[in-house]
Length: 184
Image: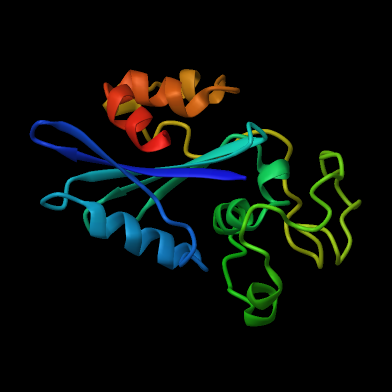
């Protein structure tokens, strides 16, 4: 099961909204959704979490290129929304229409019960994330850990978060109350 929320910065602080993932079929859809939540082209932070297995942060500042961070790339690569982020971060962002048609985007992917193991160099095959000659998906964090530095979450803090990561991020941003309101 996924939890996803958008935090939009305003002059008065942060506004949170529940991010409906039903219509998100690509990373472009996610970015468009984040940009549509922006107030006066200010910063929007999209937070996605899958049952404490991994979390992802997408930062959108107006029309600038989005910035991404995933807490556990190997775990995220095994989930539909996480794989969108890891593919982008690894430079494998070409969308394969056949692959998108096969994704079950409700958070209950087939094979979800399999243990998440790090990918060793040369160990990936065509059926695994990062297979077919693509760069192997690393175990651990992937992306830009400094994407929230100027907002009060240092790269060191972000790299060490787990469990209640989204709550800790919201707390550092001063957005705990608005995030908890959409979490209910």
